[in-house]
Image 1 (cartoon, rainbow, N blue to C red):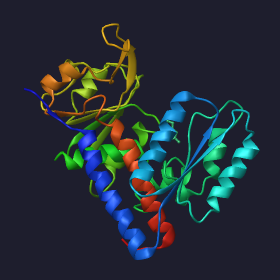
Image 2 (cartoon, rainbow, N blue to C red; image 1 turned 135 degrees about the horizontal axis):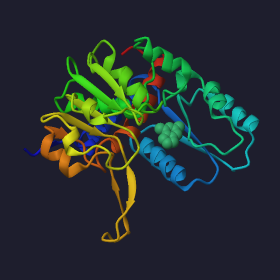
Image 3 (cartoon, rainbow, N blue to C red; image 1 turned 90 degrees about the horizontal axis):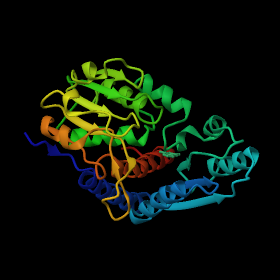
Length: 298
Ligand code: GUN
């Protein structure tokens, strides 16, 4: 059996077109331009690339975007001052402070300082709490929100299914489980969370109708750990050496793709699966935050 491929590129493009239309309507009907601010501290090259991609995507969809780049020796107080300024800026509806932050800055403190209504990462404890108490009025972390879109738009509604989430990070695993278990569209699954300390991982993963893997270890899930016909979502993106490629490396997921594709009914590729959804959902959250802050219905 060859699995269907769930393309994050295609589904992401579809959602981006919807966002662009929404942004255009908001501008025309309400004079509202959703605004994104990204804050980058230090010289981490990967972070610079991610933030550039986020601002570029925002511009392409008609959002206002502003990048604030601060030197690596910025103090915690200076950064908190920047966040306070953005909280009070009426042109900015979404604030993203890129992590990792340099040593000496308490990331949890910075997160707490972001206005929860502008917390488009969905990492503020108020949003985490709202998600876990089933509130609809919440900004949801982008990667798990994107995975729900991938499932729903590929005809794999999790309702009534057994979903196994492998990984318990605050960015993916935990909010993923919360979204899958909540009442309402995209939820209503029975959820098991497994992780790096789960003994006999394969015994658990083989019970999954929907298997979501975010363990951050290359090719951890092999074909024999997957139930025939399961839907497999691979959140991993691991750079591995490969002298046979031009660059000397390639990206693999947390799942052995070739083996999984023989067993699963549908699977996300790496790259081109979950990855493209994350920035898309960040922009979707920025628009949602702008609409909520402006008090516009619907
Ligand atoms: N660094 C890596 N991923 C993310 C993310 O989703 N949000 C933020 N703020 N920083 C990150």
